[in-house]
Length: 377
Image (cartoon, rainbow, N blue to C red; front, side):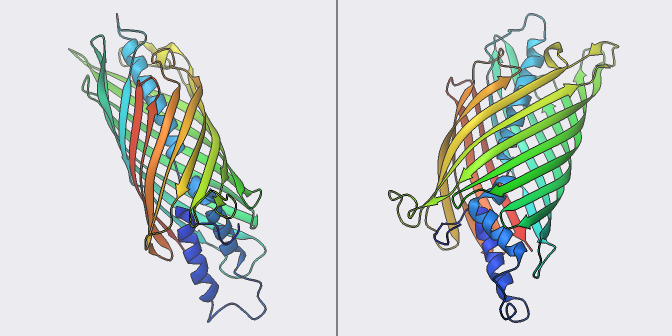
């Protein structure tokens, strides 16, 4: 990436680390050394391109989970006798506090580079009460998860990773005093590739094994259901990075980062019996559900104000698959976001971000406030 390109939030962190690492080896690099170690080159290149930040972010993954969860909530209400079969709405507000750290396993000269990455996801979610012909949807949830990944780079332009994940999510159903407890374990694979000075691609695949326990109070008992499911999640992104020297109309010191991508998920539900002996499959009586969307957005990064690096952007989002599309009329969204990365040290930063999705039909909305802390070693 050209040295004049302004830095993304993750690049701020890893390039600060790169500068430190390049001069911290017993008074400086060895005589005749051709620049910093490969591990630093990988972090610098992937960070400048925004690919490390994209790999670390669960923003798109979270948007998919929110829409699927909302659809399942609507399906649960629609399954009641005489309940409407369309016309549902939802509005979700979230607070997220992810923590992450990346550790270089090769600190000196090497032909390949390896890393360990650890992260913790913490989320609090509130689905506002909405009513449809007297039938209401409303819930609160809290989720906490961890991920540990091994990353390998054979050269500065390619980074591959494999990791394990675990998560627990507690949902309170405000409309009937019920609860849903979800636990899952998973495997995740990532691939980041720099394809040109201005473009990179990021691929993600994840497989999950889930167990869901649902409790619904009834007049004389509590209806309990325990169900296992498996889930496949795929995501692909192309991410660009352009400065004023690439695009003459950009003010000096600004950067444009376009992002085009797609995400898709399918869940398979195992048949089970509830505590009353009734057979249970998935929502709407189906054995699986599916969701997919394509999206395009662009972020503008402004010149830094001291240690604060602001950015903002807009995008659009279109669903191409949704098992619950008949329950709510919404398939296109406006995505808006703004935030700032605050550099705490050469190897630590806080990223503060507010983002929202607003359906063009006005039937679905999601907003999220994120405070993320990251470190590199």
